[in-house]
Amino acid sequence: MFVLANFLNAFALLLHYVLMMYMWIVIARAVISWVSPDPYNPIVRFLHAATDPVLIRIQRTIPVFFGGIDFSPILIFLAITFIDSFVVRTL
Image 1 (cartoon, rainbow, N blue to C red):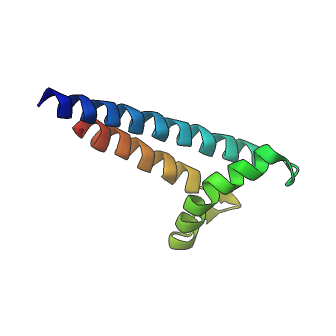
Image 2 (cartoon, rainbow, N blue to C red; image 1 turned 120 degrees about the vertical axis):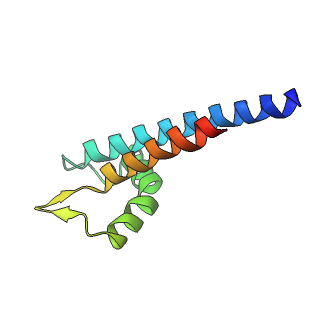
């Protein structure tokens, strides 16, 4: 039984690290949106490719633009925090 417990503990830790890494990717995307980055830069292309599927779904579902400010990264932070505190700690 301890093998299953160790597996679930390792899976929860891996999920925690993946969620935190994605949170930093979203932060980087929000920071580069404040400037006019080169769209052909490989880092900018990676950030857009990694975050666009989630951000676009949120922007389509909820009108998050208010005064030109995009609040969808904040909603992603809240979702990641919820998943991290509920699912990861439950595992």
